[in-house]
Structure formats: structure tokens, C-alpha cells
Image (tube, rainbow, N blue to C red; front, side):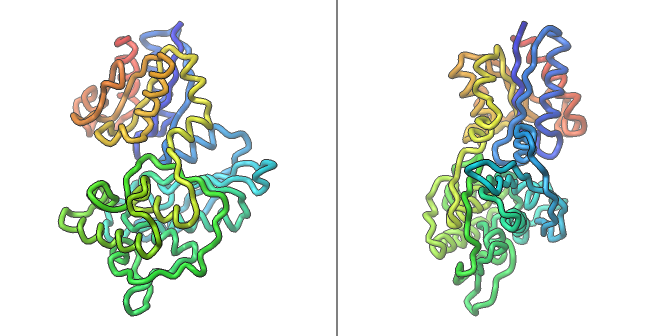
Length: 366
């Protein structure tokens, strides 16, 4: 009997990690009916982080909140309250940026005006609840605002040369001349889950690497990069700090607040006991929406491939698309939903169907 661990990330905006795991299991079972499946849906700090914690921690409670979304309109979402413990008597709040200030909340990109205010407002709601600790997932950001929206919600003031508060988003970041942190809320214990190690500025920085995904044109990257570098100086932040460029610079802003950055995939994996599950398996299947050149830099598939290699377990990959610059050598076999379905549009229209096909294909491959 084959023991198969199913540990995909969500396929951003199309199917949750739990539903992706279920579809892969159905496909595998159509080829290998005697297989035993262990479901361990994953996240790395982006979309699905709250869901992963909710599924793994008994007694976790979703707390509704309405925040200012990245499209400039209110968003109804929630944060997760984990039960209190002796060391955390107020409980722990798990909040993901994706559900408050994430790119999936936009109908159209807003490179200059989207910001992280909503994420900060959700953090404020958790602080007002009295939590002892924050666990913050910061993947899937819609903006390159250097985390200024989040810090402003927590009490910081960002002023232009005339002493007037700047606009939200990257539009305001380029005008920042001074920063006032005197009213910034005090941080509890804060752990930040991120899937990238990019610095704040420079050729691997937030604007250069991730700005185009959020709508920045090539000629706009330089001014935003320079503004982030100036912001780092005003905040006393090392712009070369690994992870400072995560979520358009929100990683760096959280460090200024007092947070600790941690690899998101590793943190979630520890919570759900993934290493032990993989060690007892014959096969582990992971995946994400787009497996590309950035997927080897702390994201779920590469992390799980490492766990599998350490335990001598066969690692397989199913992804919405697999680009030419990606490292598929980490896996014994891989399946692209785009190739199976015949086009990206077809794959996006019914991901569960094509994940079932991928599960069957991967089962035949081993």
C-alpha cells in the first residue's frame, strides 16, 4: 500500500490548498485505489495561511473585521484567534495580509495607490482584543508602499516636506520627507511568516522584483526604489536585510515595529507536523499555482522537496503552470495543469478537474 502525503499550497485565487489536496487524492486513487492519503494542506505566509492554522489548531476561532482594502473600498474579512496558553494568556492572533491588503482583492492593479492600511487595521483589532502574540503572514501583497499603510494604522505618521501627511500607497512614499513614530502602538511578540528573502531596495528589492507584478512600469521602478531606500534611512532600517522587501517592503516595516521574520513554509510545516508525516510516507505531492524561477526561494514546493530528500521520500509536483526557468530537478516527476488542460484559461476555469488529472498522471509516473 502506498502512503501519499498531500501538501500543496493554495493555487492563488483559484483553489484552496485543502481542495487541491483532495483533488490530487481523487486522481491518484483512480490509478492506485489501495493508497493511503495523509492531507497536510500548506501555506507559506501568503493566501491560505489563516486557513492552515485554523485546520491545525483545535479551538481556533475566526474573528470578523472590516478593513480598508487595497482597492480603496471596505473589505469584510477575519483574523484567527488561537486559544490562550500559560505563556500566551491573551491567545495568539494569526492575520494574513492576503485577506486584508492582498492582490487577489483587486479587480485591476493599483501600483501607485494600493496600500497596506487594511492589514494594519486588522492588527489593531487583534491588539484591541488583548492578544499576547501576533503571527503575521505577509504574502500576496497588492502594493509597494513599504508597509507605510500598516504602520500608519498603528499610529505612525509619514509627512511630506511641508509637514503634511502623504497620500496612501507608493504615491505617498515618494513624497515622504519625515517620519513620526511617537504614537506607534507597542508591539507584543510578533512573528512574521514570509516566503521571500529579498532586501528592501536594489536589483533584488521590492520595487525591482515584485513591482511589475503589482503594475509598476519599468520606468517607474527607479523612483519607487529610491523612495524605499530613503524610507529605510528615515526608519533606521538596514535596506539589505533579508526579507525586508517582502510584501512591497512590509517585511522591513514590521522589523522596525519589533517583529521577527521567519520562513513561512517552515513555520506552517512545524505547526502541522509535516516532517513526521513525510518521514512515514512513500510519496509526497506538493504544488502551487505557478512554479517558476522564484519558487526555489523559500516557497512551499522547494521546502517540501527538501523535507522529502532528507527522508529519502519521493517528491512530486503539480502546478498550475511550470515555467522554463524553474528547477523541476527537485522532483521525481511533475505535472502542469496548463499542459494537461491545453491552455492556461482552461486550467484556471476548472482547477479541481485538472488536479485530479494531475494526480492520476503522477501516480502512473511512479
